[in-house]
Length: 125
Image (cartoon, rainbow, N blue to C red; front, side, top):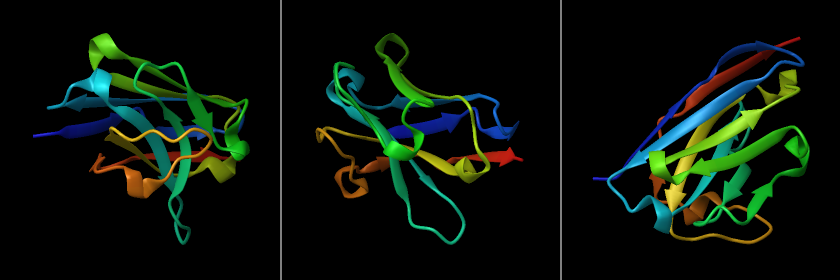
């Protein structure tokens, strides 16, 4: 059974940092692309960042480019999202997703079968 579990969310001040972690189990982690999505109240789910199976290619949405960095630690079956210079508009529930599909230049939620429950990120001004 595939499980995806996020952690690391919380409350931060604008300009601060948080690091999200996502541990996947029940799959061959090195064969799976990983991604982070977020959804703010009243808004659609947005693809934030993704990373390919080998960690050689990443995608990051323009609104967080230069502030957020995705990485993966295959030895720990974990993907990370380092979030720096946080802004109030980054406030959302952040979800981790896993699947074998990786798209260059974009990330689509419909490509991912396995999802975590989400971790809340709240940024105060």
